[in-house]
Image (cartoon, rainbow, N blue to C red):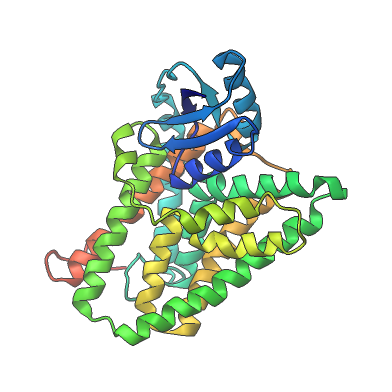
Length: 338
């Protein structure tokens, strides 16, 4: 038995480590796998006969479609500061559009007491081009590979997205119902608002991919349930796509967890169900393009601009949320009176 430590390029969040671990465990000669987001490494133990360089190539082939690369040598970190020349203007246009929609009453700046459906949809759009693209996108591609022997993926992908939308609706309603039992007051809403703002701020910094230390700060839920979801994406049973779609509700995705906290504050089954369903609907366009083979950002030369743009927008939304929360607590004056 030998143990090798490989470096991984392309990980964004805790779900990336799960996807890598479960994929590598399918190799017959590998007995143990442990991936680390903080160190961008994966430790593998098994009965290996060839050179570690050849093993790194085989591992890369198994996860390349998800956007990951495996190497014995540490990847040279390239912050690609030039991407900001494109990312900043695009992000500013998006934020300006968000302000216009706020003034029109179609969306609202994020507050735990009242998240409009338009805001939930926009957050879903942002999530779909950042963490959801890496996390849920990997599951989508895995489902496609599992069902390819049946002659196509149309049915599989349709069932997956239907299960995702339906699951988010029902489970979002359940969270809203739980919130009604607690009857969250002003202080609880303020605490939730600060928690969500910090979670989104760390998310945004990680998406910029220039400050590696932020990955150590990312909060994640226990991974036991998430592992079953990732494994389910590799089965070709006709119910697997539906169950995996529902299961994405429990993946350690910062965006999903943030919206779940908002949903808890609604204290209503209908509001909670619609908030989570609209969020999932916002992720649908990009994930559908990935599902049916029309787009895979992981292999595009401009993916750095994509992620940095999303990071700037998420940081802005986090700061808006924090400002609103502090204003609600009477600590500062409202920054916007639109």
